[in-house]
Image (cartoon, rainbow, N blue to C red):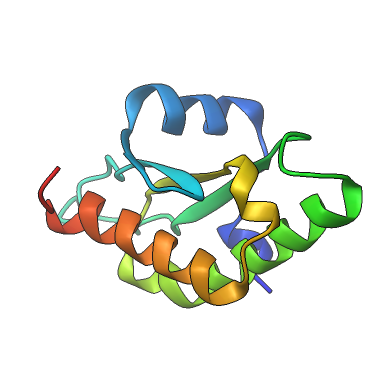
Amino acid sequence: MLPTEHRLRRREEFATAVRRGRRAGRPLLVVHIRSGTTDPHAPGESAPPTRAGFVVSKAVGGAVVRNKVKRRLRHLMRDRVAELPPGSLVVVRALPGAGDADHAQLARDLDAALQRLLGGGAR
């Protein structure tokens, strides 16, 4: 489970990540990331934790399917949140095919999207 301090909660934070961040799309999901804007060398400031939020619409499936997809995505992000820049806002939006995908397929798409966003992979 993704710890509480690493979760996006407020609508404004979701909007900031989606509107002002970078985006990478994959067949099962789209990842938006807004890198942290704090100066790590500023005296007395500690970097805020990286936070992630998830958007799973009714197009993915019924309530049971949507909750299953959200649980899987939270579990996958728990292991990957340490690799992201401190203070980043990440929004993972599941696409309709995510409801039928297994854990390994979601993991592959999430890793590919994050690698493209962080490593500057080819378009």
